[in-house]
Amino acid sequence: MRPGSLAFLAAFSFLFGCSSDGTGEPGQASNPQSGPSSTTSGGAVKGTPKDTQTGPDDTTATASGTVDVNCTPGADGTFYALKVTQLGGGKEIPLCAFQDTVVLIVNGASGCGYTPQYKPLEALYTKYAETQNKKFQVLAFPSDSFNQELDSDQKVSEFCTSEYHITFPLTTIGPVRDDSTKNVAAQPVYKWLYAQPGYSAPVAWNFEKFLISKQGKVVKRFLTSVSPDEGSEIDKAIADELAK
Image (cartoon, rainbow, N blue to C red):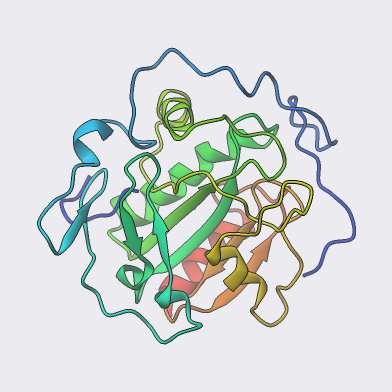
């Protein structure tokens, strides 16, 4: 993993299901409250106990590098004005650190039939950010908005580390859509996404993806069922944005 890299993820008329067998039909998670036996904590990456320690005053440590937390925030209302909180570490990561970077945002869950998409997401991150040394980032938002996430950051960290060896950043668990029954509102990044022209419909299920350009604009949205495999439309869209 290169020294300076980050580690840290159309309107819809129907739901795309997240059954435990991945068939695409709505269903319950397969025992989503039980965590694996791994003891990794602090973030969904290998070696996170040390990785989530605070670095110098002007940086925040992540799994394979540091982020400049003194980057200049964008104007109010822009992607680069926002911040996220790192999974397990409690450290704020300013999104201005991702200027001139193509970012793929995904709302994840550990007990979903689509959870295996974490594997090709990690492969895309490795392909572009690590192997090709491109300015590309996957930023995942673990969420229990669809009742398929584990009940703590540590359990999510353990699961994502032991099952999928994730090295891109995940944020602390949070809602990705408003839900009056739970008395919760979508977190700021998702409020921003829904405020962008043409993207007002809330995510319909886990593992929808939004592609952010180097200029901090939403350029593509992909349904849950569109897998980020090698050669997929997601892969091609990333390559196109990186080439601009």
